Image (cartoon, rainbow, N blue to C red; front, side):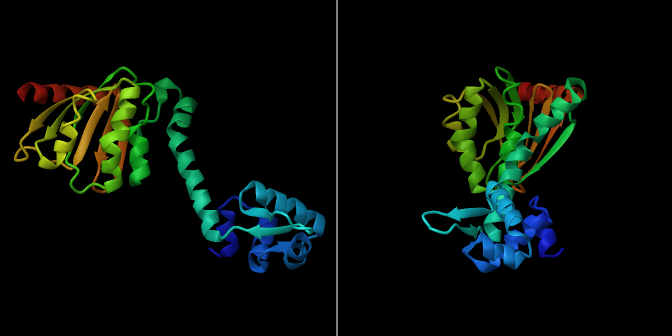
Length: 244
């Protein structure tokens, strides 16, 4: 992949790439100089510059007698695109679900990274408002610090706002005591199991027809939308819950 092809992944066409590269090489410049450098006609260059401004890749320099333009750095351009892609990805499951309808919803979704894990954990919160989440929770000793901070306050508060109750089994790990101190405040009903019997770093939860597999250590997760799988997991959970 060459430079032009790389920039086209940002959604740019040939003329937009030519103008962006010309302005990047010139630094702060006028439309006339950009037109000369890119080989495009001046009226076309003005149009392309406006398009790049809308895309957030170029901005006008204020308070100058002659209009000047500056290109954002490639690092800024790709960081912006990455952020927008992340936001769009968060909505993808809802879009796919709407397209396929309730009976044929997406059966499995894969998530990765800290933001991906947060998206998975909050997936379909609105639909499950007022329901109970059952879970085999895990230790977080090797989890990302950013994710553990999210678990301490932000996540349980979002659960509360949607009136989602939590009932689960968790390792009797000293590191998890910080969560046990707030169980009552956040309405969590947790039974602890000796780490000799249960010390998993992967949590499994079920709410309605949705099963989540949460690997905090490797920042990977899967959301499975399958009533049969959810029913089986609920039965397993209740058997273990009665034992403890």
